Length: 412
Image 1 (cartoon, helix red, strand yellow):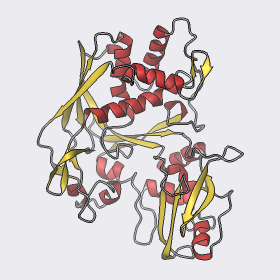
Image 2: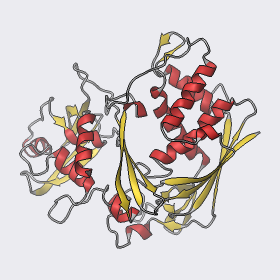
Image 3: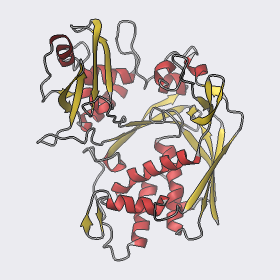
Image 4: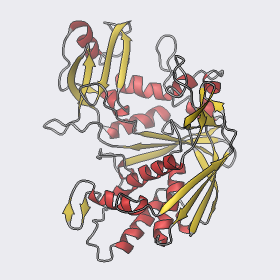
């Protein structure tokens, strides 16, 4: 049996809770093999459209047919057992509650970690693995696994460490890690990403499709035209906040939504979402149609574009007043279904990395995907504003090129 061992070290707090045991008001820390496999599967899916058309298999076009075939090959399916198993090990005394971060002098953690800590006494907090702690992932392969298949699977670990992490809030820079040792991993699986994983996937395709009639290879530059699901093929990336002396204040705080007592943005993220996208306190403030709907029962135009929707759904606006710059009883929920419960995760992935001089930097990846399955006659995304128990159809924002330009502007 072949085996690959990855010794890893956390860079930022890794939040992952046990399903079964608690310590006082916190869940115990538990990083489960299935969670790691889930992250591997996500990034494999993100990789596939870089190499093949995910909808074309054996000469016919069917939604996600090639993607599902390759997923089954790599991870198993109902008809086929997974070609590998996975275990994870770490110290058994990890009981640090996120409350220690939330209640620290760094008050921005209350926003950054929202949803992971106790609010009203009935929602136990997560525990976390602190930075600079080691954990080990062991992957055991079946005897039938192809060498190229093993190399590609191994490469997913470096792909994940390049763009993401493990646990809750991984898109926001938490759970970032480095690989300090890779034992038994194929030499060709360790290299610059995403080109390493792309080349290995292409090599595997050519090995299993000798005649070239099972898959359709794609040859296009990475761009930001929205895809059906998040993919590296429709992405742009940058490194930012280089030479940061603190992952807390220089990176996590900068990329968390914070406002001062007057409501003004305090961070890069707030400037992006509140000012550049929403138009806060400007004449075309995106909240104005919600004010009109709530206080005057004036339906927003079906052509109204909620610019902030590109950053993820739902958006919940509360306590806004009838006029710009005022507070009041106004409330609205923006979602991609008419019940207000539809979700769309943020397209921005932040990972934190440690440089050789012990400073930190962030990698920011934007993957463009459609924010709503419902489209109008012009293929524009239809979303809904729910105000006073009424749902109004409006338009979502899928202008990812503009978003990227705004990201570059607020960071640089």
